[in-house]
Image 1 (cartoon, rainbow, N blue to C red):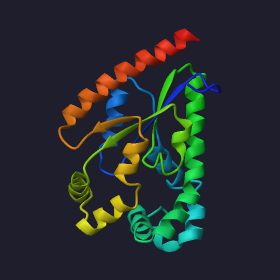
Image 2 (cartoon, rainbow, N blue to C red; image 1 turned 120 degrees about the vertical axis):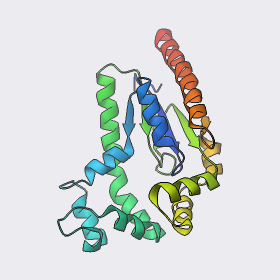
Image 3 (cartoon, one colour; image 1 turned 90 degrees about the vertical axis):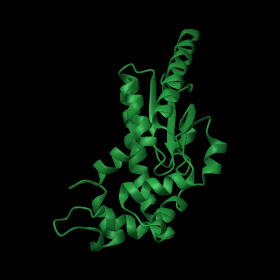
Length: 212
């Protein structure tokens, strides 16, 4: 717990199709307060969202539907086929997403919460791990990720590989994470591991509060 905050921050991350979102939902069911980067991103780019003008200026009308709403598949296809375009999109969106997430953390802290999870797909890539007291990684073998992506999003193998390759390698994430949850096999096994980890985390945070 940082000297500037009375709330303990856990960064939750994982590669695409690793099961990170499912892990976050399960933790919320256990009572955890989760701040979700993807939800915030969708809100900022929804109809009338504050990021839409900048996205249109940067990438043109081709990533928008005729009604003015963002064509998310078109934008994804564009940026995942060109690393430079992806960097430009990240530079446009990440500062606003991070600010909104930290605003939610502040609100939770003011409401008396002692623990919050930041659910961030690109936790390490964006440097948000430095804001966290510890980091949890939901991992899955790359072959499992590809299979899930192709089944879930009806992707070709080539597109699935592009999405995975665009992220930091699993090896680097494993090196940086404090806690690793393997979700290559049974989801029930992941649930059991999360339940145990969360119970232990609550005890640790409680002890830190009592030691103050």
